[in-house]
Image (tube, rainbow, N blue to C red; front, side, top):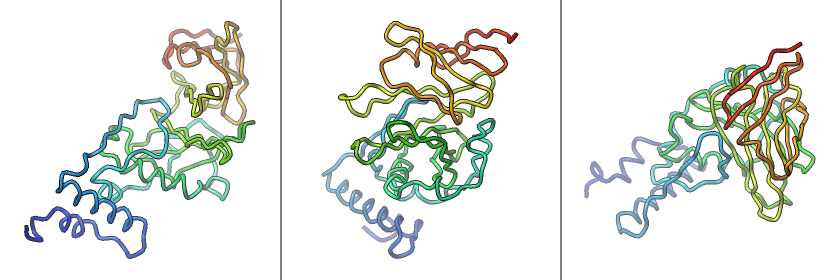
Length: 255
């Protein structure tokens, strides 16, 4: 095989990286995977990332991962954050992610099955709220201007960070709704990022209608609930809006 036809050499030619960079590490790992593939020693991994469902970080590195790390456009993210005042500030020290989380995002971005979500942009991350359990909630955008929620667990929990992405919020979709349970020993965590004007959400939990306040554009409930299936959004002007499986089904006008 000549250098012109060897995919490893072609990868190096079309994707040059500076010495010592993270991209160089990714390229070296990709080259190793390609060599092993030539020897039929490993199969390319796959990834399924359902829309608006938590997906754990990190995910498997795809064989073409080094190529996916190049040519990523940088978006300011504010289009995706429209209506979420807790995100409307320049990125500062509090918004910066731990290097390990950024590395996990880069690995996820290397997947060939990102679909219309695109790649996550750590450069757009905004910290929103720290939860009572120590979890930190962030918002970030993608190369296709999607809105993503990112939850980073405290190191003591030994839980993987997770993200979920979808279209930006609107009056017809005033909140995200996700449920995560990284550890079967703890209760599920229902969480959402809501637009300005949403004061609380309510849903059935343990057979009882439960109302949860929104603080800094985030609501959270620890425990089993049907928040994913049916949730009522309460606005400051008295309006309510019922979401079934994340979609508006009914609304009432304010007083």
